[in-house]
Length: 117
Length: 111
Image (cartoon, rainbow over all chains, first blue to last red; front, side, top):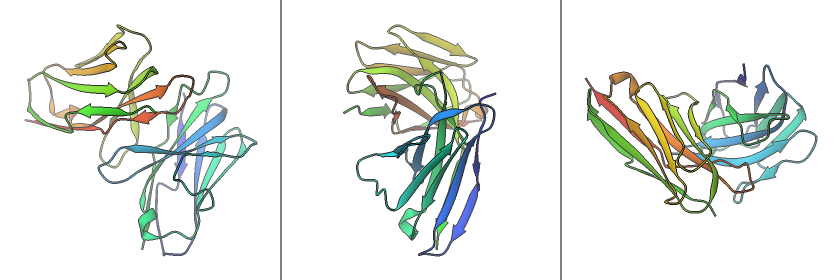
């Protein structure tokens, strides 16, 4: 149990285009989901907290107009990188907290590698 | 603001040897997590430590937590090649659910 999927697992796009990444909790409902980014050989940095039915909370320094987050259902959160540029190339990982257990338990997705040319 | 640091950043060791990875954190953390990450992959949960003195073991890995010293350790016993990976610890500031990750320790076990 407690499986989180991400789609796509790998994407290459041209500079200036937008890319949508999906994060799904497959066998549980998740009121809260989190989005992280990881640069090569570096640690994970929390970008934002996504709550179902409400606006996401962004960490300091993360542009909310660039990284649009939508958490429209209890099993799906999406991250859209708008007008992507090469510096947005990174590994994006989501995590989900099962509803009713509390956000201190997070299950991580497999990650999405974004390369912007 | 919680900051989490790991030591060492890189570790190369021979099979059969023991070693410890250290995770220091700057302020109170409700919980301490250890994760493993293989190249190009996401995180695999290893341990969750909830209280002072907590010790958990799984196979050749053992994690402990000293909240007074704000220190967690991940001890590797008789390392094998399959343990080669990057290991992260993460804390959660008191009253929040935000994971703050350490710098990571890249472990390479030589056959």
